[in-house]
Image (cartoon, rainbow, N blue to C red; front, side):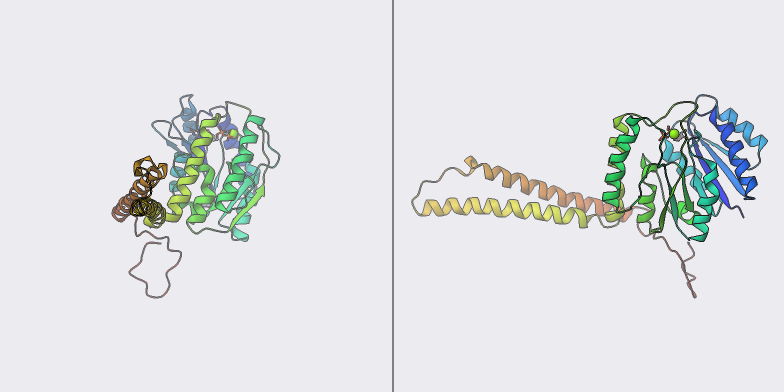
Length: 326
Ligand code: UDP
Ligand code: MG
């Protein structure tokens, strides 16, 4: 039985990874852990793979997985998660900013406090202001919409119970929101641990620029939407669509009837099309119908999706032979 799997996403970090392997090995041996290091090379072009090959030779605990091209940190983590065999799965950046010394304590928190996941908190952070300020903003938004009270969602150092990583899927820029995805999958016991953070010594940071942030926010919106309405999309589109349509319908009706009324009273009445509200009512009916149609289409799509009836089963007791998938 492997105690800890350490998953390391790697994109152009050839200088750092030998140090990282050595450091992890020292800590693991000191604490007598059975461990594996899963290095996922996310399409590096700086010779990182060569270094990983040499590390695999040096240390049988190291596994290497190489992507044909750069797919992003989330993809690398997801692949590592599928491979991980340890009771506890720890993710760690390759750039030596996260410290392997934290692993034993993280392991203990998962095993003894029975937490589903523990997220690192870089309380004292060694990054430029251009990173720390947007990061504060994102943490606040994510806390607010997800209801998870973590200080630092974006920390690369996190630990999970094995069942968690086998039950979730991370893609796009979603690596920041793994706790949110886990919570939606039903893993609610989420802890936080203050961790040490170092300055980057080698290579350069990959997540710069505001556009990344925009993508991140869109991913957050998708996670929330899929988590809440993925299996019943009409419950999202239906009320909005219905409301919009009704609003438009009754306003148009009111405009028409009030015109007829004025005419019948021999009053002057302007043309319906001269009334700006007429156009608002019309648009609202059109949007309402479209939302409704969107809902139906989404229902059709989710009906045909392969995992429409995939629920995460935690336990089966008694003669539950029919359900084998746990
Ligand atoms: N990374 C990756 N694929 C990418 C970008 C980054 O696997 O497309 C890895 C990178 O090698 C590092 C980790 O993700 O191990 C975090 O990257 P970085 O240190 O640039 O992020 P930051 O610490 O600035 O948030
Ligand atoms: Mg870093």
